[in-house]
Length: 290
Image (tube, rainbow, N blue to C red; front, side):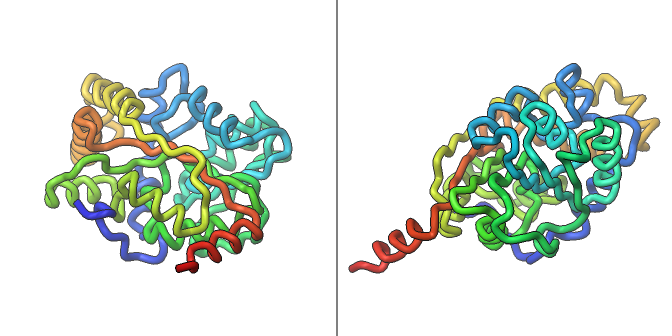
């Protein structure tokens, strides 16, 4: 396996990703909500609320912190963190269905003074430079092509000493090409990073990596629960989604569970800081020295 397990060719998130999540979110039955059970806050990532909260605290999010949540989905984590910490959050998501559900969620929670959502592709949305203290990602950035360009854009949007804080799916061990390509097609991934290629992309974008941890444990926990529920409640899911969509979802979940259990599919948990301008100049000067 080379440094990056799969090349990302597009410059914007493909329309297939929006259609994929519009379809997943359009039914009344949420598989992710069932898998999280009593710990469901509307998150579509594999993390529990406590794990999301811990990431936010490690990133330094407090009352008044300005947060950009890229891939905010139906808005659950954004509303949860605003309620818990009093931070101001702008959530961005490419799914029209997810955006509508996020708008309804923030209205029902009476959090519009802290939380806002925009529908669109982060690659093209006109956002103010140096406007955010923290950029948050929860198992969403694996759908964004051209990771290097995306991270450069994040650096522009962050204030000096601002931080990236994210969990994202990564490939931790080599995979046969055919299996890897099939897995990416099932999830509409443009390609998955390895922990090493992610770290290198962060450093190339000018970030200082503060923490960089890899685990498969959360993915195993989530996809195992999801697979069990998807099997036990097959008639309910088939009635809601139809046999073809049920089978496609089952294959996607089963493959994810197998790969996570084998330690092939993992999560990178990372916090990275944008240095002050002076630090960047000094570092570039040192790199040019013979």
